[in-house]
Length: 78
Image 1 (cartoon, helix red, strand yellow):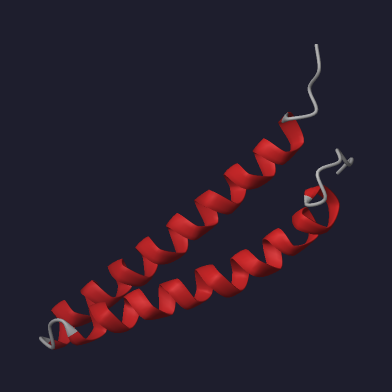
Image 2 (cartoon, helix red, strand yellow):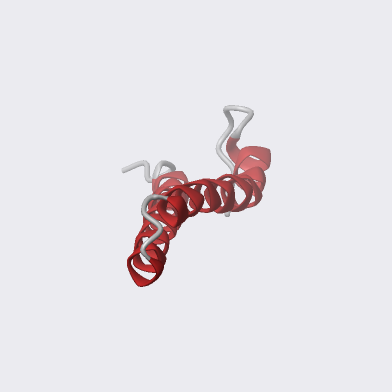
Protein backbone atom coordinates (compact mmCIF):
# COMPACT_ATOMS: atom_id res chain seq x y z
CA UNK A 1 0.00 0.00 0.00
CA UNK A 2 1.37 3.39 -1.02
CA UNK A 3 1.03 5.93 1.81
CA UNK A 4 2.75 8.88 0.12
CA UNK A 5 -0.46 10.88 0.44
CA UNK A 6 -0.60 10.74 4.25
CA UNK A 7 1.99 13.42 5.08
CA UNK A 8 0.70 16.05 2.62
CA UNK A 9 -2.88 15.37 3.66
CA UNK A 10 -2.10 15.77 7.36
CA UNK A 11 -0.15 18.95 6.67
CA UNK A 12 -2.99 20.49 4.67
CA UNK A 13 -5.57 19.40 7.22
CA UNK A 14 -3.62 21.26 9.90
CA UNK A 15 -3.44 24.35 7.70
CA UNK A 16 -7.20 24.21 7.13
CA UNK A 17 -7.84 24.08 10.86
CA UNK A 18 -5.50 27.04 11.33
CA UNK A 19 -7.37 29.11 8.73
CA UNK A 20 -10.78 28.29 10.19
CA UNK A 21 -9.72 28.86 13.81
CA UNK A 22 -8.08 32.20 13.03
CA UNK A 23 -11.12 33.58 11.26
CA UNK A 24 -13.67 32.22 13.75
CA UNK A 25 -11.70 33.53 16.75
CA UNK A 26 -11.38 36.96 15.11
CA UNK A 27 -15.14 37.12 14.58
CA UNK A 28 -15.95 35.78 18.06
CA UNK A 29 -13.64 38.22 19.86
CA UNK A 30 -14.96 41.12 17.78
CA UNK A 31 -18.54 40.12 18.53
CA UNK A 32 -17.75 39.86 22.24
CA UNK A 33 -16.12 43.31 22.30
CA UNK A 34 -19.11 44.74 20.42
CA UNK A 35 -21.40 43.33 23.11
CA UNK A 36 -19.31 44.91 25.86
CA UNK A 37 -19.22 48.39 24.32
CA UNK A 38 -22.40 48.40 22.22
CA UNK A 39 -20.60 49.34 19.02
CA UNK A 40 -22.12 46.72 16.71
CA UNK A 41 -20.79 45.84 14.09
CA UNK A 42 -17.53 47.78 14.35
CA UNK A 43 -15.40 45.28 16.26
CA UNK A 44 -16.98 42.31 14.52
CA UNK A 45 -15.81 43.73 11.20
CA UNK A 46 -12.39 44.51 12.64
CA UNK A 47 -12.26 40.95 13.99
CA UNK A 48 -13.08 39.57 10.54
CA UNK A 49 -10.24 41.50 8.95
CA UNK A 50 -7.76 40.71 11.72
CA UNK A 51 -8.71 37.02 11.58
CA UNK A 52 -8.27 37.01 7.80
CA UNK A 53 -4.91 38.75 8.08
CA UNK A 54 -3.69 36.28 10.71
CA UNK A 55 -4.95 33.38 8.58
CA UNK A 56 -3.24 34.66 5.43
CA UNK A 57 0.10 35.52 7.01
CA UNK A 58 0.21 32.45 9.22
CA UNK A 59 -1.07 30.25 6.41
CA UNK A 60 1.64 31.50 4.07
CA UNK A 61 4.32 30.84 6.69
CA UNK A 62 2.83 27.42 7.35
CA UNK A 63 2.42 26.39 3.70
CA UNK A 64 5.69 27.80 2.30
CA UNK A 65 7.78 24.82 3.50
CA UNK A 66 5.03 22.49 2.28
CA UNK A 67 5.12 24.01 -1.19
CA UNK A 68 8.92 23.92 -1.24
CA UNK A 69 8.83 20.21 -0.45
CA UNK A 70 5.74 18.97 -2.29
CA UNK A 71 4.96 21.74 -4.79
CA UNK A 72 7.00 20.40 -7.69
CA UNK A 73 4.86 17.28 -8.06
CA UNK A 74 7.39 14.88 -6.60
CA UNK A 75 6.86 13.21 -3.30
CA UNK A 76 9.14 14.43 -0.52
CA UNK A 77 9.55 13.34 3.03
CA UNK A 78 8.54 15.53 5.96
